[in-house]
Image (tube, rainbow, N blue to C red; front, side, top):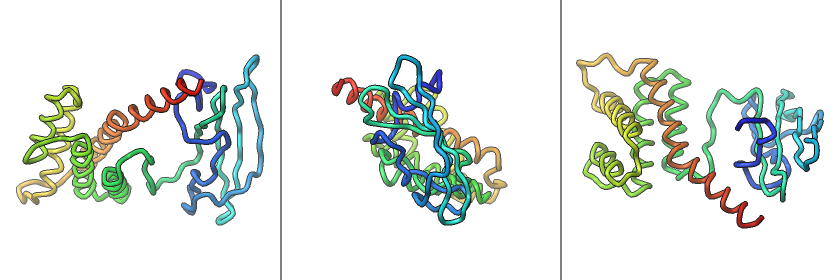
Length: 219
């Protein structure tokens, strides 16, 4: 996104209005229980494009959340948003992800927040393997599954290398090698960060392309 005017133009969720159920309170973690305390708009000159600025009041804990959101400028079928502050707790994953992949991904992030470095690495490895199997990976183990998708052209060389790094770190924690000191803090953080990039590459980008094609068809 090169400009805030691009918000909601290329990706987002269905609907031309802000879906409050998609917003989670960063303080009490309750979703959708908001009332609008303040609303303002900024319209782009010579366009139907509007940026909306909402301050939401959580009806549960009385905390405030600020949301910048906008719908597509043509037929208003989708909208996208930025929320501050955001919850420092992961309670959901994108709806277009496979359930098993998202479940392990959530646990990888939650264990990272709780500073359970070994558990985070194991869950990241599990999320990786689930993602590869969703894409049809074949093999007796994760090593072979990574190589299978690489040979098929689904995983480029850089993703292949990082996938093996994640696999090896997860293996060390899974097999409880007593000669190792355990997963280190920064290693766990780096591996989960890579996992996020992998999810974008394998699931988010294809989903955005599909949404783009749908918009082109409707227009």
